[in-house]
Image (cartoon, rainbow, N blue to C red; front, side):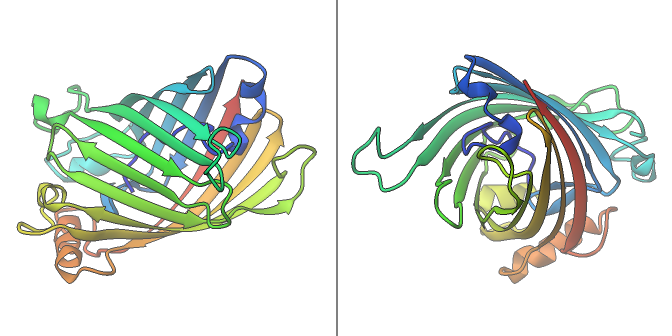
Length: 283
């Protein structure tokens, strides 16, 4: 799926801990390794990437985030479109989000907690790379809205992303999953947790056309099945790892488009297996 700015602490994530409950400002730093760089079930980079990121949350409701994606190989040298990107950062994502959790205590008619968020993100592609056009159109901006029901067993999360620059497309992603506590901890968060999930993406015509998947229609895009294991090393430190499978399962036209997209130099299938690790510290 596309790397976008998920709202920190909107569902009481382990990495956030209880720090935000004690002070009006909290911070989170993460270093992540991914075997591939994926966007909407498509491979942007078939080589491993490293992503350092940081976020600051103010008064539990406003989060400002930045992430830099680094290529680890000379993979791009094979394709003139990319150039040699080994050891260079290939993308910088910066954004902010305003988020709130409404509970039955706040709104009497709500049966459960509801997390809502609205955010903005800017995707910057550096001009220092040998490949790429370097045109302003390479960058883009997003408006993102999130809706989460963290207390339900399936923990549904709906994200709506609107690209307001590059393709003017809309992408919707619905994720269902459940967090299982394998080893209980001292507080609310387990010491070791496993979360299987399944997510389905939906793109409108502008989005699928922008990625050359189809010219005349949108539809169901990537399906992602994922398993994530999180180990809370300490009160402010967590290590997580995941494996995932993604494919274009439900629309034959988009599936053929995905195969053609990958055959441009990355792969020749619509399905992919990915894995990753992330170390997260919160203060």
